[in-house]
Amino acid sequence: MYFEAIFVSKGKTKHILLVEDEVVNALAGCRVLESAGYNVTVVYSGEQALETVSHSIPPDLILMAIDLGAGMTGPQAAEAILRAHDIPVVFLSSHTEDVYWDLTQNTTSYGFIQKGSTDTDLLASIQMAFRLWDAHRVVVEAEERRADLFKQVPRAIYQYQSFPDGTNRFPASARDHDLVANLPEYSHYLEAELYDLVQRDPKIFAFLREGSLDGMWYWDIEKPDQEWMDNRFWELFGHDPHNKRHDPAEWQHLIHPEDLKRALENFQKHLEDPDHPYDQIVRYTHQNGTTVYVRCRGMAIRDENGKPLRMLGVHNDITELMNTINVEKRLRHELNHRVKNNLAIVHSLISLKHSEDNTTADLSDILRQVETIRVLHEQLQATDELTTLELKPYLRRVLASVFDSSVEVDVSGLEVKVTSKVAVPLGLVVNELATNAAKHGFSRDQEKRFTVNILDLGDGSDRMHVTISNSGIPFPSHVDVDNPSSLGLRLVSALVSQLESSLTLTKQPHPTFEFDVEYEGVLVP
Image (cartoon, rainbow, N blue to C red; front, side, top):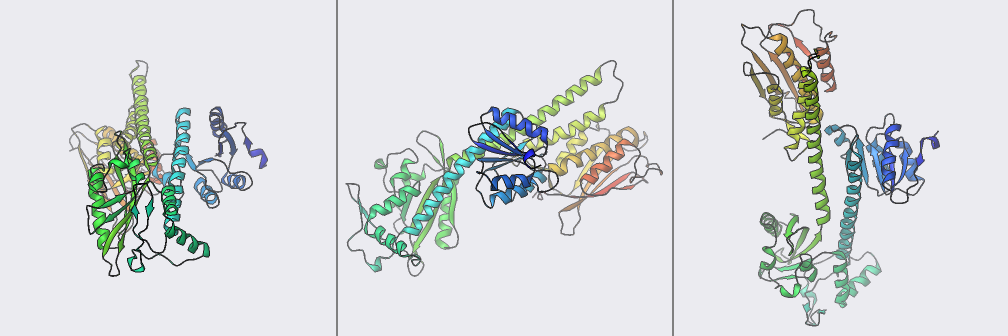
């Protein structure tokens, strides 16, 4: 049966392993990817994916559904594969709630695609994943070269002099007491041999430096206007090294002001405390006006008393990686924007249907439910986090779509952020109870008031207690919240169950609904 559950397309370019338990979705996804020229292998479970990767040439990318039915989940299968193979993984899900993102947090992934996305969005996400992977490999390889460099410099670092002919020569006076930094003992005779070569032949050190870094600098802390920068330091920013002085003032106007302030603060903290790392991402302005993202790291060279004498630093260009991350962030904003607009279209279509002369059904409840979800995506789009939102402002907007100014609305209590996993069902619960109160709960001679109160349970858990009440007439005594007969109360009970809680109803003197909810966001300061 295993071999009946797998098929391979006939593409000739990059190989994608598609892991999807829904056969129809798998076939459709394969068709789209194959039409773009990809070689696609399809399997229907995490176990099959693990066996396929283990017994054949690993794919260039894995497109993995998060929910794979019985057996391993997508993240579990991906984690097992990544323990033995270095392959980019893109997760696929029909859900956008944070709980599904959270399932992937322990697994390195290169994207998250929502099922039902257009073919263009799917292919764009795959292309972005390959770009992220390529950028990641560049950074990893540069990091490996940098690590090799610092393993292979001599046990004693001496200053050397640059001559007009382009050569670098160590001074003949270099002696043991000129030692700048001690390095680990040799672990192999070839390591000792290489250290000796580097010390005797500066060309070896230059080769290691140029092959692993995108810039190096060496700063005289005792003479802070003296800083040596190698040629690649300037070439990265589009400048001719021969036109630049070995002076920190030469680069400080090129770095973003906020980043310069942070870098100098870290510099001072590192000088005062060797355990404080000098390591940050900073932005430089290239000569052509573009932004260059650099990971800038350094270490102080100290004397026997711990006094810092010099600062040795290195640069790694991570511009491509940062640009790709920024593109992904913009795409996620665009996704929320599209969902919000599509829900607005659905809302308009229902309104048009409702306005037809021959339509007698009351569709106002559906309109408000759609509006509840649309408001959520609108609020998510307006934030940088994209996955969490402040609960109280969201609930106030939901209630504003239900009540007019004759009803006093009070949303009070805990200031908390929640994920869309919590916000959608909780918003629908509040909408349903408010709609019922507006239709049946209030009497003409009563003050109209609707209240939502959110309290921390105070037991150290990330759970809140939600109380929803109104000033209307009591609920009939025969209403059983555990076995509801009305559609509205069945919907409320089901949504509370989705929140992994149970519903309590106090019928008199006014209807009061209570339940606990686990929130995954952080308290708003």
